[in-house]
Length: 396
Image (cartoon, rainbow, N blue to C red; front, top):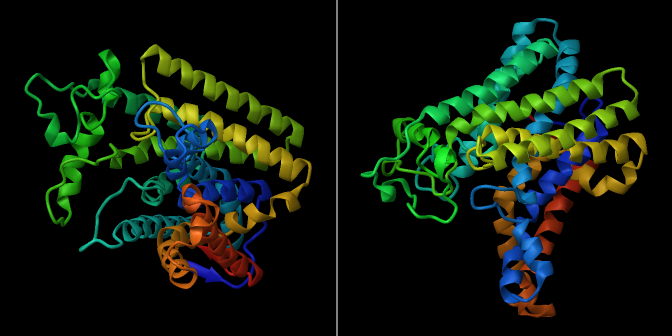
């Protein structure tokens, strides 16, 4: 990881704004909309916001569920620009590839470091955003040098192969002890029939982690992930990054801007519709937590639609000033990610020390999390703004 005192190479403005939007959604978790909704149970407005600030239990999608696929998608979007920039500085491919491997390793280690905070020892886990991207990045980098046809074949192999691997994994038998897997036999979100191959902690990815994660030092043996998340999700996450790579190649092409926008909209709507149909058919459910192939297609569609909006607003209409708040975050996304996972608790404690334990009740107890979280978010943005003004950009 390096800190530069000069601006990075020319960037795709819409990608920075889109990334800033995604990081803002993550940072805004400090607003704790669910607490306001619980305090005001009759309010449909706060119930709606609370729903979209949390992950769905299993099948389906909320706005919050689109954070990780968007971040992964954008890694692919900017890769053609990154490759072009690196090749201008270094003509030796293997040196450039070694840099990609180094970037991958830093992402993995940073993810593990952040997950290990407040633990008694290193917490080896590989399902968070940074480690998932890090595990797939070398393969994405290599595919960035291949033809569109090869990239599409790779995407097809990833989706079909991952689907088949889950489909062939045997379902729990009558003697299966669901408690040992942190699962509930009659859980309301369990799928039935063929789709049961993608149920929580009774699937192929869970079985893999029961073996893989126990290879690392642990306080106690790994039995299951409480949320159902899995290491192997980096494989379909690579599919999401590949979709982003396709979008990035379109952006970097000589097509007219309006043609690019039209293509993004077509691909976006097609992905959402196809993903919805695959989920309804029972062929493959739409589950973000284990990143099913249907989720790759469905969330990829939404990523195209979001990119369409920001590309149209920022790059076509040239309304960059409207999105300055998001640009500040998006141009320092790694710093924003680390700040949101480290500094927020320090800011929270400091506010209560200096303003009083009950200062956030100024608008009533129901809105305490909104006032307190809003101030935390403001201070985090001001840190990023200071870095932006000083041209301090953390890059991996």
